Image (tube, rainbow, N blue to C red; front, top):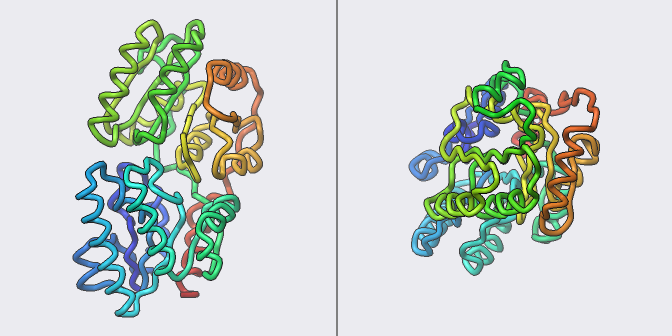
Length: 344
């Protein structure tokens, strides 16, 4: 079985999710490699496992977005004509930033009619996908959760050492926002809300690579305007060995998404034993159901200063047992994924 995955291993430095799955699939005997335009054209294989079809509409430039979208449509059409099956793991129901709504609406209507099966990462994710794209109801549907990140990143430091390495006082209340920074993740609003909350002896850590120069400049300008608050920016790629510093130094991980279906950052935070604050959107309520309200706290509407204050107090004062992520082991998830491949 030859599979092209978008992505398989090539995005591992940014997010090892797909690479962890692909590595276990290889161990099961699946010939899986990264989708590229050349491979798609010359040797498309028996199956494409598409994680990120929305990538083609990410760009702010309308010309680039249209060009990449049409190129992918042509390649997928040719591969289907040659007998290749298409499997979509539904991470999101759109680009979230929605720079080109008309292009997206056309693209998604076309795309969902040219795939053969779907994998959802959560029960709510599948329900919302079917409501948004009814054409998916005619396809085989599977729910296979997002695996954990334990072992993908070192976790050797204690809280005090992590804080000393970041220059943060041991008694400070620390809120972390971590990951690739895109507009829908609402980071400027988090900075403004943190400043308005005026929490004594508190620090807001923003750690991650901005998607483009526009969002980077917006974040820097917002942080300058909130100069009375202790906002610390680490804007750039965070090395694998350094990820632990930010999570182990934090009391709370705040992820104030404008739109969201699934969140790898939630799973990453829980793997480091850090409670999370998220909006009641997408599958976030399912995360609270699965892991408990001592680990996942929901807010409704726009994140406000009182939401942030309450969540920080909850994060610091609530006793928590160790969290069980055993059902998210990659080896078991790979077996279930291989079974889907074989069914196609």
